[in-house]
Amino acid sequence: EKGDTVMGTLNKGDKVVIVGEKEQWFKIKPPEGMYLWVAAKFVKLEQTGEREPENSKPQPTVTEPTEREKALEKELAEIRKQYEELDARLRKKESELNEIRREREERERRVADLERKLKEAEESREETEKRLREAKEIAERMAAESGKRELKYTAVGTVSDFGPYVEGPEGTKYKLLETGDGPVKYYLKPSRSEIRLDDYLSKQVGIIGTVKKVTGWDVPILIVERIEILSK
Image 1 (cartoon, helix red, strand yellow):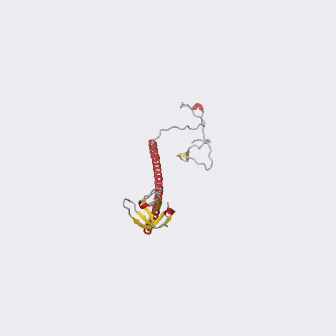
Image 2 (spheres, rainbow, N blue to C red; image 1 turned 135 degrees about the vertical axis):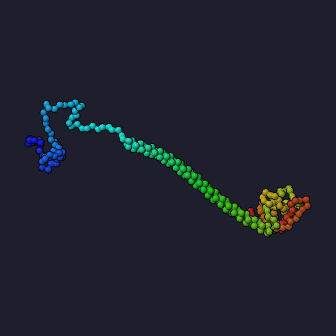
Image 3 (cartoon, rainbow, N blue to C red; image 1 turned 30 degrees about the vertical axis):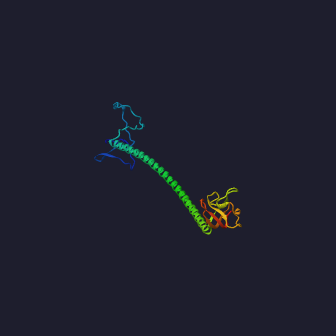
């Protein structure tokens, strides 16, 4: 404040910080980079610990977490726990869902297999019914034809003989069988000499004639008036 000793310089436009005022003077904070020197003999040093180098960087300090930080960490841990529980439940549900899908696919396969077998059985039943209808039609047609033959002929059957040393009632030598193996329906006797029964042996024939019952014989005699071959 007294004298005109130059302590430092400012350039035009430099900004300063005013820390006091007296009359026509302002007390300002020393500008950045300004230092003052003092004789060492006028200074007494006190021990305050190790002196850090001028250019050393400040070391980070470890601080205890605040209550708010502790609460947030606890909340975060709880959220993570809930997430893990939900994730485990989700994996379990996915496993159950996959098992249900496999069961459904197995049931669908079994249903498809049963439907296929049912369709085959239905087709087989229809084929069987068709064959039965055809067989019935053939049987009805044969019965109708047989009925017509029975109406046309006195008897229908297969001609056979007794052999060289056997005769039937009234010297008959031939018989009319139901089929080639029997049973005997009639003993045959030609009404005329020109009717040769040897010509009809083992053949199915239709005969027109007169039936004559013989005492003591269960099978009657058929007197042949006309005979026709029905099949070889």
